[in-house]
Length: 290
Length: 290
Image 1 (spheres, chains in turn green, red):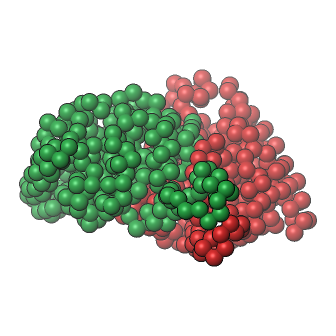
Image 2 (cartoon, each protein chain N blue to C red; image 1 turned 90 degrees about the horizontal axis):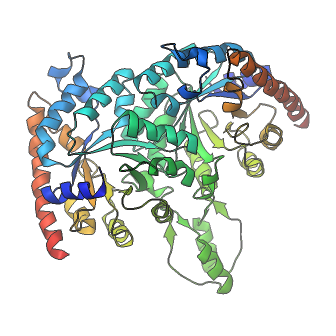
Image 3 (tube, chains in turn yellow, cyan; image 1 turned 60 degrees about the vertical axis):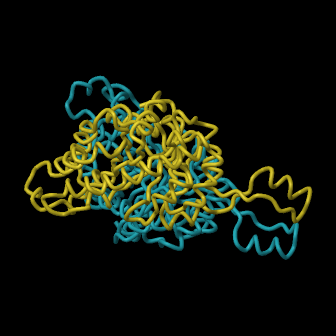
């Protein structure tokens, strides 16, 4: 799916909800336990019930890998079942030296039919390039994540070349600090474009999200952390939503585990619809503001 | 495998060779192409031929994932086939928020019987903890990698708290710089121990490797980049090998693709044996020096 098609989906539905299929076999409703294909059946029911209220699904690969080969079968069935109208994200956090990243890109863009894959930036340019080379596919690089651990490295202040130069000239000089996550996004934005690159920015960081939106007005952001992790949809949207959307806000557990009984899919639908309605209002608000 | 057992293997064989099974289905010898289990047959022949000349095998998961479900079957067969005497590494570069990292840890430590998994550090402490919680299993965190892209972020200078404090007191003050990879290793060493934590340090960085060894005398390092990537075994060993070993030097393509014909396994054995012999000498040298 290219950028124009994604914008059409988002604007057409005034909706930027991504539903995270973090399907944990130990959390499935009891009546599904006997099924050989319990995970796919769960996902299928969730997709059927929620597809009118979201524009994207995100598959967290870890939960499928942890089931061994059966998990990859469920993943494949699920990707194939998601409607072509919906943006399909492999939340896989991959990244390695060039020849290995090329294998990961092949995995998620060719072997499985995802539109996008999340990528960890630590190994630098050659670890990201193989993903960016695919046409009409997307690389979603970790910028500032939603977890506590984002403080450990992402929010370190890094010394830039211009800073070293200025320090030589004027000892004690004060100027704008740059955090590692800002440096990562700045470099990545030079390697990709708003047509093939998105950033992960956590919903728990609404203030920084606003700054990041100013720096990257054109890029889509994938925003995890609303729901179980505590981020506020209204705050996130007021910080970074614009008239073309520019956001995919992910909700996983709060939707897919909304109910635990036989009516789990209806319960998921109820919550997805609430997000949809709130997004509709926030979208109107953003459109009026711009 | 615990630290004492690993040291016994390394010291007993005076060998610290890890063979990387980056098995690419497109590079297999022609006579294997017809087989349904070509990748496993290739790995099996390589393991049979080389196991006396190495102490560890590293499976690069990307190459298996790129073959879809058949790839995971080959991965599982291969892990199960590696002798119990050999240290088994999943080179997977995983890392995500805590509940998701827990799924990855389960995948590589429970579903598949690896001793160790490589982990990317960008998401911080809670992304690494779930791996460290397993007893007699190892977390191998990316420190300074062997690729060109390691310059992009890993080698950025980060501002530490003590540095900010000193700058306030004495403008223009100069003191030791800290790179991001040094900060990553420093933090990680506080979260894990030499019993459950190793670092990836590229063979292409022998000078830094020596500094890193000084800072972390007890930790094992997994060193990729010897062979096709151009790193020198002698330089690496003189920089960081000690009497207990403390190194696992990985060679992938230079061994497994040493030959392309029916005698590929014998060709791989020849190269593995050369590394083994060179390591024997370097081990003697390191033991005499200490």
